[in-house]
Length: 158
Image (cartoon, rainbow, N blue to C red; front, side, top):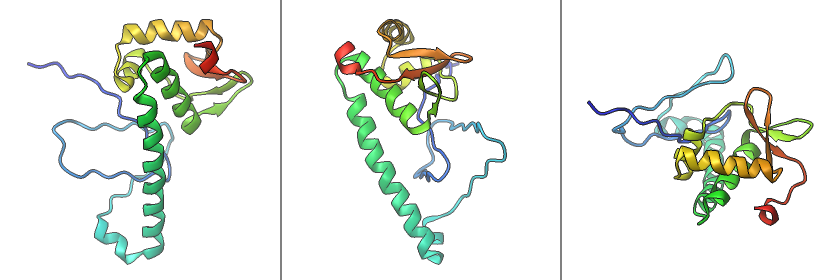
């Protein structure tokens, strides 16, 4: 029996469509952090019925594509610490909430999930998170949430 391996793929928020092209050889799971979440399933030809909605969906996909190019650029960095901080910065930029110290990610992520996302190990992520904390770039907020500190130029400090 092969043990299942968890992999972090990303987040889809309100107003962000996604496309499943083929039946994948893996199991997709989704978790809603907001009550009363609704998912609408449409086929592409269904959108022809509503041209205005079709335009909004295509515009949303265009924005997502541009954002993915930023993600790929960040995850293509050579140094792991650059990938880690870039990943956290983009994630907090997209989903973060403001607090007195800066902006924090409103849901917890394990070091293993982060490692999976940036192509590293849990041990390396733990070590580098400690380095970022020592440099004052990140800090814990609330119940083990990640906070990106205000007013830091991380390129100079890392």
